Amino acid sequence: MVKLICHDIMTQYHDKIENFRCEGCGPTHLDPYNFHNSDEVLKMAVPMVMENRKQWGLEGLVEDLQAIIINTEDRNFTPAIQELLDYTGLDIDSAFENEFYKSAVLKVQNSADFLIRHRKDKENPHVDYNIAPKTNLHPNTRLETFVYECRDIEKYVKKQIERGVSFQQDEILHRDNYSFIQTIPSCFTGNSIGLIEWKGKKGDYSSSSDEDLVIDAAKKDHSYLKNIKQLDHAATRLECQNRDAAIVEFMELTNYRFDFAIYVKSFNSITNVARFRKDAYAQVFTTGIEPYKTLETSGPTEKYVHNYGPRVHHMAFHTENIEDTFISLKENGMKFLLELVGSPEEGLKQTFSRGSENTFLVNEYIHRYGDFDGFFTRSNVTDLTKATDAQ
Ligand SMILES: [Fe+2]
Picture (cartoon, rainbow, N blue to C red):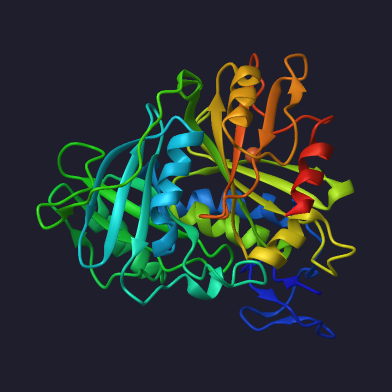
């Protein structure tokens, strides 16, 4: 696969063109970039995005992650909630339904909220991104939306529409306690960006027009679940050739900054990290270095995207007493892709659960030691990445 990028306007061309000529800005004065992921293009794009955000009047409008929205099939709605109650520190805060959705709000202290939903409406804007060889029976299942708090949603939407951004709703939804809108799914990740401006108490998602919903799921009284705390990061896996565009798009829709990229050549994998502020929740994008070839020859990341489509692969939870918690989770039925890996000397311990049958999502349990701020260590990245190959 060839990807030629005009350095001046960042437009991509996928066909090899003799005497490359950018259709956007005329005859090229720089050599086009022949695709093989490196940080060369991203390093040029990131400062441009940061500057553009200021010029467009978007800087300072969007805060950190407020919630994630996970949509499930109807039959998986309650099991997905029970599973999160059983294997994380999350508990049910409220549940309600209206003509469009049934929703359960799950919370744990100092974390983004989890909205588990079943969409009643047949129209699902994500469906084209949801269907892949291993997801055919769950066409509505996805971690769909990352919702960020917005200080002035009217101004944000006006500015983004001027830039050509498309939203799922024709107008901002004004509910009792908040105003909300979300973008159409990204063609790079299949994920949507939601914006919420609170009118009153933060974190109250129901409105007077909603009806209370009784959920047949309950939190068990296991003390080890209290060790599993806030959402540390969520990692989206996407096609390698969309890495730069997906990160630029995400930065243009939020006020996140690009932190760093770690290359693991042996697994054809790059972990790319964006954050709103230091030590806060991290938005992770994982891609190959080179594009997917075949199931036999491609690395775990490209294979996963081939089998499941671009989507969030795992949600990582900060975990205290991780050794005991890992043992207790196993004793209580959680299945893992690998043992607990890492050590205090290396800076972290972590593991991956098997993917959920209700959401496809893997739970990562992670504990960092000292001031280590990474997402894996040199010694355990092999085990971790290899473990996901089985998916
Ligand atoms: Fe992770």
